[in-house]
Image (cartoon, rainbow, N blue to C red):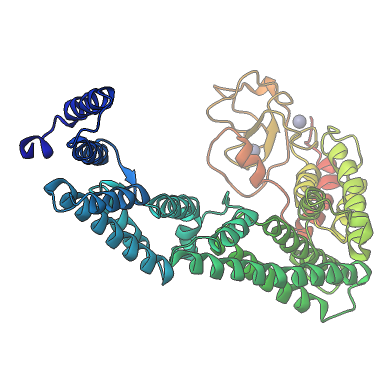
Length: 480
Ligand SMILES: [Zn+2]
Ligand SMILES: [Zn+2]
């Protein structure tokens, strides 16, 4: 019987003992050995139950109950039960350690150690599931926090201006971190980041309000407030610096584009003031002090992209007026430039003088008009973008059409310089005479760049040219 006691075939033993008991009961008489058989059957059943501990993990309660039965049946000393006692003791030891870890400042690596140790336990550990959940929550939280942790540790220069990290996600993570039953450094880092973000937002709220107020003051500024420019410059510096620190925080803040717009609007006001002040004092300054028409147009356009209506600003309105005056003159000037010499020279001079006295600088049109006031050739007409040739002796310019040249010769001497000698490239019969001028130029055909050189550079030159014209006509040999 001892052989089968701890043997593996307990099921067969149970069957045999059960049949024996049934047979004994069916005899209908008192059999002396029956109670012994009954005890042996209980022992066999207890051992069979003990084997299930190895087949699948059982709860600690189940194992405790099993061991108490074994004690009652006096079989707890058997090897099988000694091993199960060891399993129970190891599991209790694990549980004790787990509760001590969970009670104090729980570290993630301690919990992971517990899980690793639990792999070799042949019992269901009551705390294991909770610990696994704690680890899983902490790891999920860390994973979600990773981008925020990386911006919190990165330097200002490394942060991207188009971050996708949202503040509300950071807030959620900080609030979730309160329910993590594990000690981590990371929630503190995120809390600091959140605190910095909130502080930054609070400062910006004030800055944006200041910007609104200053823009309102700039609207009514008539150029007499000498302090406003420095106030605007100071605010631009603060707004730009706030934007920079916002970018360094690495999150996507609604305030960032607002700050950028605020800085651009303030910059626009600054430029409005400086453009206006240079046009106010234009009578005291040289031409270079006046704002150019192009600059004013560009500036008003920039304002439109910032959704600024220049008319809302006292000085902006003045710039619009300057622009309108300048454009109106420029339109007239461009028309005269291409009129093929139709407008009388003195009217061209008047238009030039009007342009020079404008409070804005329209250099391109002025230069074109000055070129228009230069008369050349036998026809005494302006260049007017027509093909021209220069006399290699006197330097005077001739329209090829006027001197009856049907091609641009490599060299040309006008008939005024050489009235009798026929030219190879341009026979005398093909061109009229023209007054001889003293300065000489190398032989060449006029290019656009060279024609540009011809443009009248200053007022004195205009007067001289103007006087020269009638003298030309009284020369007796002209056009003979
Ligand atoms: Zn001509
Ligand atoms: Zn000549």
